[in-house]
Image 1 (cartoon, rainbow, N blue to C red):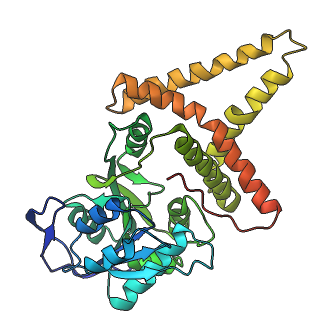
Image 2 (tube, rainbow, N blue to C red):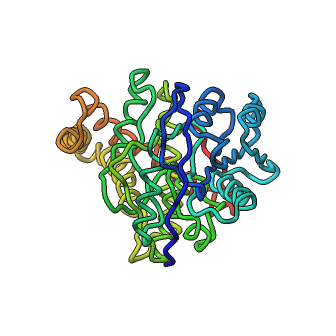
Image 3 (cartoon, helix red, strand yellow):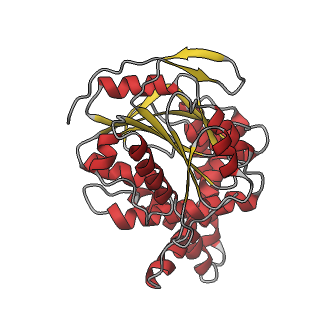
Length: 353
């Protein structure tokens, strides 16, 4: 893997509160933002960068709320996806990446960003410095935080979910700084992947010999805007679909991508409740005692969460319950994936907002 020359330039970075700090940013860094109808979330996202100092490309997927006009007014390059082809976040990232390199072919790093997130001050410095000093690493990601955890229990669950271990890891989320050379080498994102496209590209990056690092640094603020059980259910269905698709694509040894996750929702979302209900008559209802395993498992997750993360008891308990309850909609996601594949159809994104 080729080492790159030292980065040389310092620029000013505008914060969302309009204050300014000096940041060690690089002229060899660009940004790709994707979104659709993100409204004020997109405004905050774009304002967390400085398009006057580094190239930013916004890929719009059919917004009707003025998102494209907003991006243009902020000096951002806008790419409008052809909606005659089914939309995926992976496809949007590829189009943004291609346009970014057309504008700046010598870029070394690219920050991928979702339109409902905003970059944390200092993140680009930290991530670029790490990748520059560690040429075998293709991806640097950090701590993502939920913007409004107090608005709903579902937002708080997301904030807990974002808190993952620091160090070398197997995958990243939608917000990460990547080495342009590595993304090009693996052919970019797979546009057919409708969910967990970031996990999928990380599989191919690791197979190509690259590494991924989660830094102990603030990376982004995310606005999930989940306020109802219906949204939570649809997000969990999407997760189950993503696990199923990932296991189908990369589940064979030695990778075994998402195999463990698929086994979990099969067990808790289908096999255990089906067996308990099917055996209820011949066992005079004794088999229904198997449902006591659900609160027991929720308690185990609660204890583990309290031990490994700085989470209040109430939120840790909600997290434990949600983790086990989500296995049912995740199994529905598997059913949706299987039905789509059997019919020979192209998967469509599952939106929860």
